[in-house]
Length: 232
Image 1: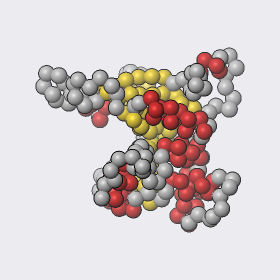
Image 2: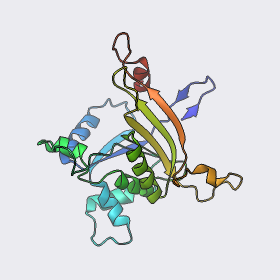
Image 3: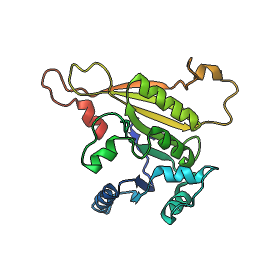
């Protein structure tokens, strides 16, 4: 984002956006929605049906099978070229909970095609440089936070910010969702900075923290105005 002289912040416009969706039906629906956008809408948006894990498997040193032409094309197109990556990984273990009979819902909720660890490995391959960002959501509890930190660390990514979302009923006291922001690790850190102060006692990165409160209003039970500000 860039700061105008007026003090207003304006989001930078992307030149091109690419979506990767593992479910064929969802990929078709997303492509259809993109085609229905106004012709004046930028950027150019395309949706590819693929499994993120196939990208990371091929790029690993131990890959044993050649990728499909579609996956190879994606790797050539996207590797090391993305300024912003976003994702919403499923976070229910396949062994926990009741699986929906609807395959769309089942795959969206359960980690049947990998989890946050796979998203982080893909981000490491696709981000352009240390100024690029990987932004994704995950449940806001201690166990999930530790899992996210471990996944980022394994992928050699630097956690830069946590934004916890307080939502739902007015009496809700604990955030339910956390938005994480990460980047590639700077291979040439500032020697004037104390590196030890950038990690907690568990060896995980210390990040900027914030909370956004979009709980319904106590008096009217209507949506919080902050919710509409974020949408805008």
